[in-house]
Image (tube, rainbow, N blue to C red):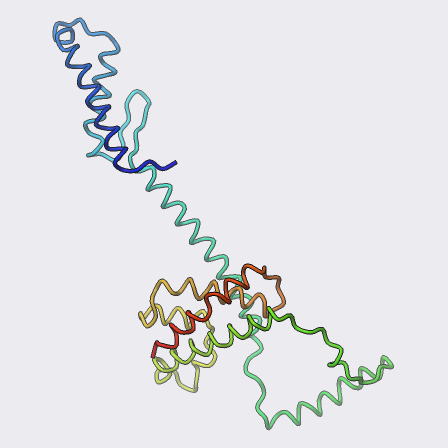
Length: 243
């Protein structure tokens, strides 16, 4: 339980006043050499309480007082959160690299040549197994609506991000290199140069990670899909306003 700051200050004042009062009443005994061990402890506690606001940590009689312990816990939590975010980012990047690694699609003038290659190689292999070509596309499993919706969101988000990136950086990238930039790299560039808000980076990455998993056949929960559907419209609207 985290105590409010005003309570800590009040408790410090009470302890300081109480120990000071005890020392005041024992003053005559202490100066005449009639002190007891408890007087030393109370005096040490009084001094410790006096210097707590000045020093971040003190130690006496094996007892350590650290006023920044809560800040330390918060710092650890932040670092753990950064590590978790980095792990999720690597997972998303791995999925993206699998998709991006195939390179650009073949141009239209190469498609007839590719089709001939399919006839020559694939049909020959089917014949070896005694299998004839049939209309298998009609029997494919229908894509779940959630997965289609995540694709729509991802498609529109990527279009907006590439539009913004193209408007700002295309002239500096020869041969349309911008077309082959990963989405994560695009978002990093846009936040690095403060084209989009820095706090927006993690929001985009989390939404895209859900979309990516759905697109590539990974399991996503109903709550994750609901989260994307609920927030995608205003995220897209924000991107649409960035020129």
